Length: 71
Image 1 (tube, rainbow, N blue to C red):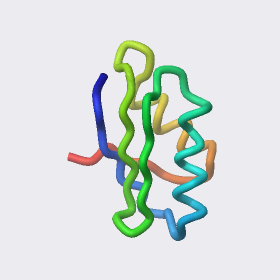
Image 2: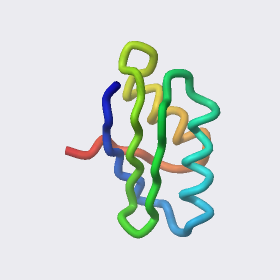
Image 3: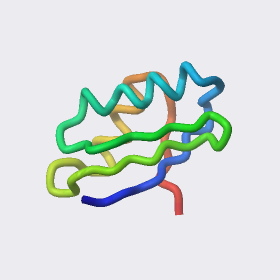
C-alpha cells in the first residue's frame, strides 16, 4: 500500500469532499480516501500495482474536479 496526497484546487465545500471520497467505490485497489475542502486536498491510500496516479487524476476529473499530485 502507498499513500499519496493530491491537491484539488477547485473543491469548495464538504459535499465536494464527500463526492471525491466516493471514488473509493469506483477505483480498484483503493483502501481509503480522505478529502478536505479546508486544505483543498485528497489523501488516498491504495495498492500501487492496481492503480496509477494518472488513473486517479482521470477519475477525479470525471467527478468534475482538477487534481495535481502534491510534492
